Image 1 (cartoon, rainbow, N blue to C red):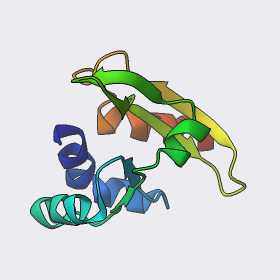
Image 2: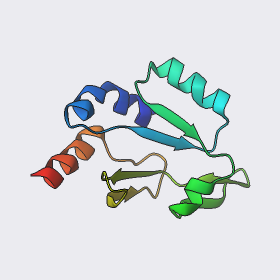
Image 3: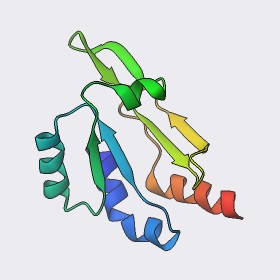
Length: 111
């Protein structure tokens, strides 16, 4: 949740760069809606309980949490043509890119 809070706190900086934030989670719609409400998020958290998007990006971590399959934490920048131009695949749920690092990548891509 801390990653999403950081993204929300920097949402204005992403908007200034014409960059939309979208999160994807295995959690049900109701859980994600609650998270959006609790964060006051200006972005959507999409539900992927069947892990179709997660599998498309190769992010399934088999038996990753209490014997259940979960999504490996990852961040992507996808251009207007749907091409992945940057990705960060976390080895740990505790180590994720900071919003300012993602913003620097965006700035570098447009540099």
